[in-house]
Amino acid sequence: MKNALQLLLASTLAFAAVPLMAQDIAGTWLRSTGKSKLTFTCNGDKCTSKVSWLKDAAAKEECGKGRPILGMFNGSVKKTGDNVWQGQVYNPEDCKWYSAIATVNGNALSLKGGYKIFGAYVGKTANFTRSN
Image (tube, rainbow, N blue to C red):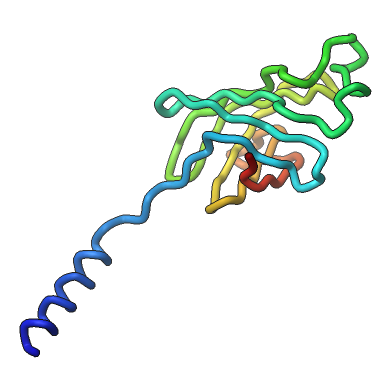
């Protein structure tokens, strides 16, 4: 009984000492509006994203320029901490690049894009869930 208790205590302490695995941004994410999906592809700490699905793909083009949004490259981020990536994202609706910070929490992705002022992001946040 004493050995079993010691084994249980040792395994509990060993488990507590192991850090939790970091979440990965790579993969496909469905926006909370249900209107689009982004796919992130990573190479080391650097990741790029593209628009991989649009609910209404036929009607969407970049800023009226005639170029389709579907399949277009729209961002580049670099891992800057546990579950955190920072970089640039492109908004095809206004044809502008914005600073961005992305955080992953399980199957949830929060992508905040805007202007970085005194270290804080001022802009809009888009929420996503992991998708197929």
